[in-house]
Amino acid sequence: MPEIITSPSSIPVPGGKVIAEYVGRVNTGETAVSIAHMTAPPGWGEPPQTPQFDEYTVVLAGSVVVEHDGGRLVVTAGEAVVTRAGERIRFSTGDAGAEYVAVCLPAFAPDLAHREEEPPA
Image (cartoon, rainbow, N blue to C red):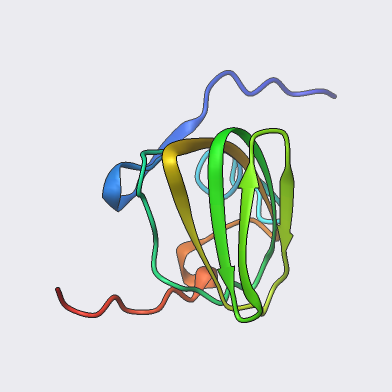
């Protein structure tokens, strides 16, 4: 039977990024996939990570920068990027920030992201 998801769960993230998870471990208990709407301010960035999940990112507004061992991609509104499990990547935003949808297989979990420690400032 179809099931409506009436609202997302907000997942707190440092740096001003907002995660609204519609499907996933937090909002629905789903472990196979997560679907979240993200809003990140200009200049936002997270530490490098080597996740255990594939991530499909569709940029709705602004731009998402994906640094990887082979270089750097700038993904703009109307484009998408796929990152694969086991790849070392780092996400950040451009000058206008970004609004995007992320789909992770299996579902995102902080312990599956394998984020690196940020060096002290």
